[in-house]
Image (tube, rainbow over all chains, first blue to last red; front, side, top):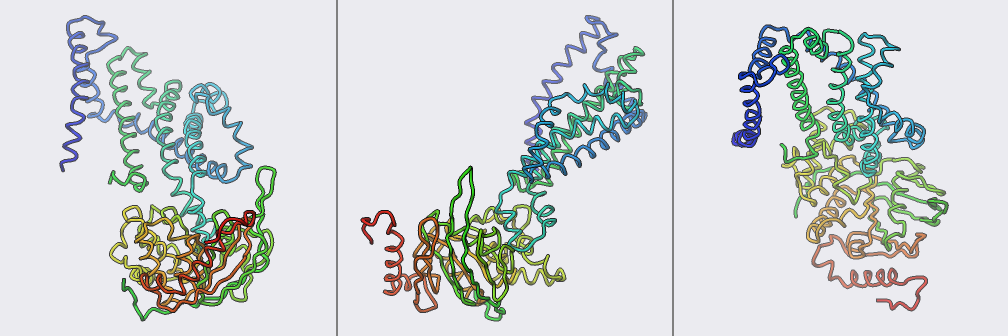
Length: 258
Length: 276
């Protein structure tokens, strides 16, 4: 019980600091020191955010964005993990693909959107592909590294007990690589959120990226900011959730967390 | 340490015979002969030790016997069966117990990892078997612990219990006692002899610790500097049971140990090095 309390004490100054930053902004807007059309009062933004959530307006855009994110992310992760295990295990596969991957990896995946639209149109296929690509590379690189770091003693332990190749993959290689894979997946999660929002901004699909741009175009500036707050909260929640998943699934990595 | 449960059934140790085993490694444009034409015969239920200077290829030889690496030439037989280059019913016990135990499995799951894939056992039968072996190493109470929650000596006991739970025809020990402290080592020696007496598996131990080899084994084979060749096989021949204090003072123990040390300390290219 004392631990959560201690944590609250730890983050209290940080929260107070955020409040201290918002307070002058609030006063500045109320005293008309800034143009309220472009910079609305934080209180107004929060009130609108609250309205959007309470009235249920939040659900449709949130669901649209989340399903695109989940789909693209899942595709990207699955492809990267399978391919990463191949590359990590077989030197020849690695040598064949490594230069191509090093060439494609540094491209900001958002920059591929115009090309993706050209080939796949403005529908979900384009967004899923771009999110999938954004997810793919960090997970791939980490999986390859993780597979290479697996101690041969572990593999030989399974072999000496007569385990099959499939059993070695599922019971040794994947769990041993899991900490690396999950670290890559955490990086990919924030990148794919960025990419999905950008993709939605250029294709009116009713997602979170779309409603932010819509608010700006219709001079619903307060709404635009409110949706921004919701996206920020989503990013925060996803990261928080993922760290929890990470601790639970690879509990042996830092046992002191238990 | 008294952990003997007399009602346990013995594992039938089988003979191991290796013929003309050689191993050449190729690395960066050159080749290196690690093991050179080794022949060796281990009787069913025998405890054989192989000693040699570091880098003489003794671990390589043991891994070839285990089927973990293929020999360049030669054959390995377990009983009458040719088991060259295939992991048969022999279990390799690693020096690096902390890497050999799987950190995402608790003690019980680690032990079950050695046999549940081969035998269709009910959950309770598997657990019983697991606990029988954990009891023999005195760790029943720790069955739900994770390896990293145990001391080094306890971890190696789990590894031993896991190796024996597979009920192998032979146990291949790769310096399994070299990375624990001296007292724990003596403790594990006694435990190993205890288990061997009960279970009668064939044991092949590779070590650079001559005292350990003589204390545990029936016979001790001496491997030369690289490339590894068998240059001598000595009968330890002290009576059993062997006990940590008395056996180490046995005149036979001292004589055999000195003979082996002299053999090991004589370098082939430096005949003037004084023998002990």
